[in-house]
Image (cartoon, rainbow, N blue to C red):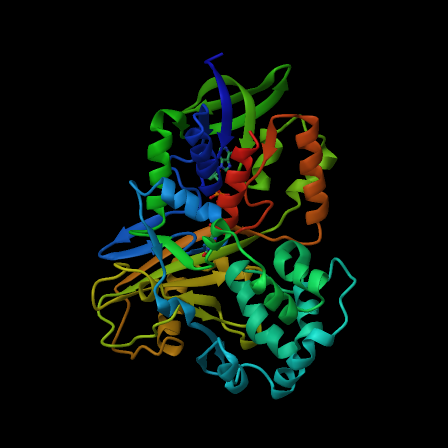
Length: 454
Ligand SMILES: Cc1cc2nc3c(=O)[nH]c(=O)nc-3n(C[C@H](O)[C@H](O)[C@H](O)COP(=O)(O)OP(=O)(O)OC[C@H]3O[C@@H](n4cnc5c(N)ncnc54)[C@H](O)[C@@H]3O)c2cc1C
């Protein structure tokens, strides 16, 4: 035995680091085991010749007070950066150009994105019957309540942006639980949204502003800040072949570092890695139960950071543009981080993030770097309307085989199995983005909830 630890956390991504940091704040003894040689997990910011490109997430939403709690606790180490006003402008591709997604009553009437029939039909949305299929997909629900054009030109591109998903395969209650509850609790999206907005909020609730955030200088500054507070002695990198065994008074964990075998004991263990890592990590779990957890599918995604040093005045001033499946283009969407955050590109330049693949085009992640670069250059001219004389100065490709978990109809059984295992083996917590939401806000909230429960 090397030593005995109180709480061991597997994974130094956003979930693992936030859980460890929240526990560290409560003076708990925490150790993180991370298989990679660096912290951050999917969060990796790259500084390249005056550009900042994110390899994973670009932005989160301040959807829970815990997001603000985290940044307040770290304000001596990193700075929350709330997106500029331009982030409120969202674009959707239709025909041969981007159109602004309506944000008010006038633009909702004049937008060419939706049909006149659906625009009129939406007035009767509060009177439509409530759905009774708990596994109804987001596509079916949207068609039923709002109409096909809202599905095709609002919900489908939104899901491509968030889940890299196909709206036909995601049940609303797992993928967009708040939307599901609006219909179930209030009978209508419109009435539900109005009633919820009118509900009294505590001062703490009000800190969840729903604004878009990053961290000044890139999101890696957030994970680095937490790692600094937790202390490098408490984060063990390059830990391979982790195997956890329940014992009379907690857990025994075997792992190797650089081929050398280690064994530690702990009272509690929190896993935050993907479902695919769990079978070797939890070998004591019945195969049938494990199968209900590991059958989680992940969308593969390629993110391409594109930098232009001098845009010669080309400017979009928006959060980014999403592409509906119907439009049959290669990219899922393009984000414009330098329109939303400071210092993401040289003064006269711009930084973009192109997304390729997802459940829509999983075959595209097999394209070579050269093919990806050509695709991005073509779209820079055809979609972003850059003249042929302007070519990108930087193209950086970040590949993710297992980017975004898909909360399909198997989710219910997965949650049951996790809950059963946690009850059977007190002190074991199976966390991470295999449950409770995929966004950074969800990850932070889950981490604080776990820390509070320990
Ligand atoms: C391309 C992309 C774009 C995204 N965009 C957004 C966005 O704009 N907004 C948003 O809110 N979210 C976005 N997300 C989702 C968001 O990044 C994730 O939900 C979040 O970062 C996941 O954090 P995590 O700690 O749960 O998992 P991870 O970041 O995956 O961390 C898990 C950690 O566990 C480690 N690990 C895995 N297996 C083992 C093992 N066997 N032993 C030890 N360690 C192990 C991994 O190395 C990793 O460090 C995006 C994700 C991707 C991939």
